[in-house]
Image (cartoon, rainbow over all chains, first blue to last red; front, side):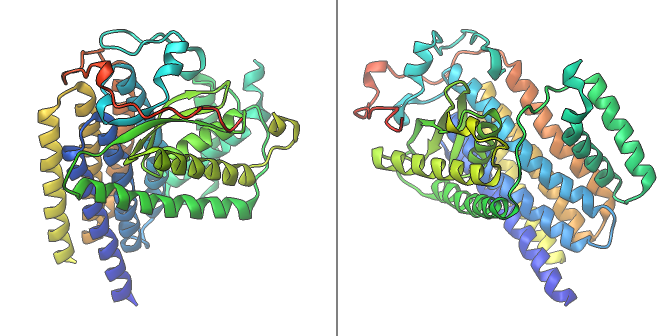
Length: 130
Length: 174
Length: 108
């Protein structure tokens, strides 16, 4: 049984590392910030979760397993938040390649709200979204 | 000081205490008590606005939601990896507005979190009065793909609302 | 397990090199920010893999710190980022291939 769990843990760790590598590939190959963030938020999150699960299997006798649970939980909670912050800033400072967008439904609404995303312009703070 | 009303802050205290105990790794009364103390201090020094709406939790629906999100996380990771590896023309994407049915900030937050985590999407902007999420979706080629994403996002919202029903019905009806 | 460790090391090493490439190329602060985020998470994966391979649980607290540091770092930088001009040539608006727009709020 130990060998089985060891094999499972090894597989999880390798899967996680592979996903992280793919995140790196995506980071280099995708054309603009927002696309790169997809690479940064998804395969990377799953990769870290896999590695943490593998480590959890190998360390299941130690008290530190609970910390691994926390790492996974933090990762799941924080990755979308930082992703959103960066994406919002990227859009508002026009780091988006609009020639690669097949549709942009945000710009008309932002303009209607009196916010013109553009370089060097400080996006006005809006009440609840800060 | 109504926002520091202890009853409202109870879930936060419970969560912080849980984190504290997990960090120590072992269960003991000393850990529990010191955890409660620390979370009270944290809440006194850095007060948070209370979550004002009460919501029940349906365990079974919550499990379905978690299973759905987990499956989506795997599928979208594979998808993004495939896009990263596939040669050829540059990946196109779209910024789509998804108008949710709910007006509840809590549901909006959970949907936004889950969407950022899953299918090739990152939240760019949120308009909470109208319940609209602006989502950057990777790998959308045409209007059909955009509609497919919209349908998935609304299905996710449906699952979340099933898992976290409101105590009262009137808010949902909005 | 040592084979797993070696392979994991190679994979993560290549990943870190790729991320460093993006970190060096930029072109904007936000790209570098995202790269730093991924680099930290490569580090976290490395620590996790090390813990799994050696069964050494003393590094786990470091893992917690690294995974939180990534969030705090990117959140604070994204908040206070200088609004630099985009380095890419800004495409003229008229060149945007616009799909015929569907009525947006069709669902209401």
